[in-house]
Length: 122
Length: 168
Length: 91
Image: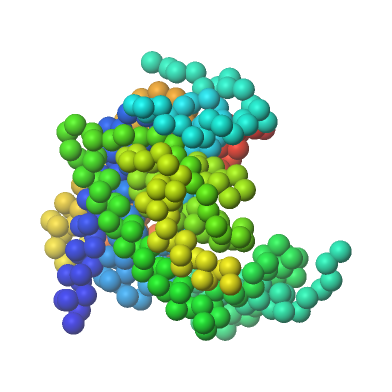
């Protein structure tokens, strides 16, 4: 019985590690900020969830604490990336788009601060 | 001014105490007593902010839809993750990003928050902003700019269940 | 070192794969080019470090590492939110 549980745990751990690698690769390869959020943060979120579930299979005593960490990641991660994406748009960084698909332009952004800190460094 | 509501206060107390149990992960008598006391104090000062909905989600007729929502969401999460992983790995980066918008039928703020967070957590779509009922979504592979079709592609599955949970 | 890992080589491979992902995130963190890119790399690194700590807590059988990873996550989340508020409105 314990062997089956630990094999399931190792499978989850492997999937999680691969998705963490893909998250890192995505944040490295993607061309602009918004696509980096998509590929990086989200893939690594599933990787972290899978890793935590795998450890919960390997160590069933710790399941409650691991569940707390899992729920915490699932709640905070979309929040921080959403807040950061909106702040970045209001700083004046438009998304890269081949056909200029940008429906968010129509909103009044005048309450936000003018971009001062967003200098590109080499 | 809002008057003291015993029901809301007990809801907050119970939820905070469950969170405490999750954090400490033990049933030691001193830990539990400390948790009861601390969550009582915190609940007394903050129950007005935290109990707009009460324990609405855990009502017996809604818990079925809550579980169903979790299943639908997990399936969408895994499918979309593999999709984005394929895009990341392939050498030519087959992406076509852009920001689309759609209208949502949801009424309550909490339901809209859940929908926005679900959209953000599924890879490929990212909620940039929400003005009244209009969602602005950054989409990694734009197939349509029409609001109705974008709604069908991104949020239809989630919203059908969320309406049953929250807006009935 | 004494570990609880049933297959030490396999655990080493898993940890190496995670570490390669973290290295890619670090490269983006250093390269930028804008402030937002650095913050999103920081956010991703947070999640990766949390899962790395959880995995290490299993390998070395230390329950306290779970508390450490939870606290790390809380502090990183607050940091990202504060930086985003600063970008949007200033302090």
